[in-house]
Image (tube, rainbow, N blue to C red):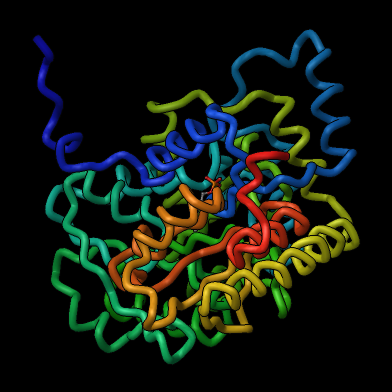
Length: 393
Ligand SMILES: Cc1ncc(COP(=O)(O)O)c(C=O)c1O
């Protein structure tokens, strides 16, 4: 006998990558050489200073106990410094920053804190799948707001206004945008804040890509006047500091928002290892040169990824930021799913199909830049059919 799961489990599907990567691992275990251009999992190292700080903490006898629910002061202070230096935003490190076990978990804490069953949440019709999944898990009603494909995937504010009801509580926003790579602009953030203020909704901005292949200085939504009344910003060490597996992020907001979220979070987890937080504080001081070098590596990979898109007959927008390349499939490709499966099984190249980010992604694919450029060039050759699929390496 199997005890039945809750309604929420029955209506939730396992995360696409959780399922698909199991398939990829199976192929690898069978000895196939898979080039994984699917998930955005940075393959480069954190800075040397970061590693040294972690190493030092690991050997300190008093570093292994539970830590404060609000994170250690030096991590919060480093985040506040980082916000001041990077975005020109002043945050009080004691009251306006809440460290998180990655920004993904922040989506759950925010949703549990602000949403009652049947409250409504507006999510972008293309976006990080967790906004939708978590909103549904807490019993909220999800409505997708349109993005204007021909206007750089910007939100369609008029169409969004038409979706509002008295129950609309949260609007999720994410620029630089994943998966389309649409950049963040101050103008867009000003429009978002005006929208949230006039409609009395909470604007949750997810900002993990602002330092990756950005063409202009990075922007925080919190730099817009008035944002703090209506906005929470999530940020993360995962992509910008090559620390995805360390699970370190934070949210920044006015004290009442932070206090409310802490009520929930402190009942769910017990924070992070002191050494991880100390090392993250060090990482946040990485030099501009360190960030430039990381981006230079991604630039080199971008060239190879563009060649792969060309080989597949795709078109793409050159203004993209972040660590992916979003390409539109040619008319001649009948189905993204078939293409992805054929590339995986016949060429041993794994690419993410656009539909996992929302139905509007049906005719798109997303390449991750988290693989050495030589491997991406090899993928190009495999797809062109000039080389085998790596079996005999
Ligand atoms: C838009 C977006 N938000 C959040 C996350 C999660 O980041 P973290 O590692 O901080 O949980 C990702 C990860 O891929 C992402 O693409």
